[in-house]
Length: 165
Image (cartoon, rainbow, N blue to C red):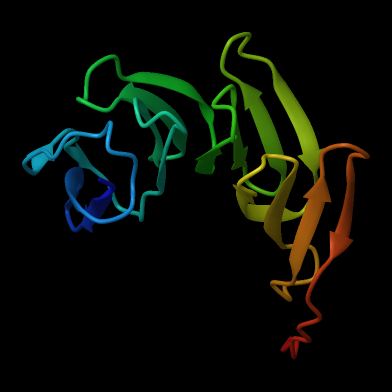
């Protein structure tokens, strides 16, 4: 039997990440659980989060930092400064953005690799061989794809923006 996990990020004066396993499309090894709050932080901005591929850990951003915790809310630890974190397919690294760039954080070593300038909201493909991100270079919000094997980016969309000065 496969089940579906619902996660809600409640944004107001505080942010709560609440996870529930109900019925529908995840491996039967996941057990159904009741809703349970695992974080409570005062924050003035939106927060983003991602489950590790094995479902055991959650990476999230809060107040300009990328955090990692176990799914039960324990073992919270700040990893680095940044926003919009997303786990790789193998769960060994996290892609995220800083103020202008897309970066890769190695969970085992703590090393950081700069992938591309002028990017935001990066997200790994299911295979982990590629990632997509929005550009910030020309304010167009064009979508780009970064290929891990050749370390090159290519533009996927062509959105023109009207600049007003």
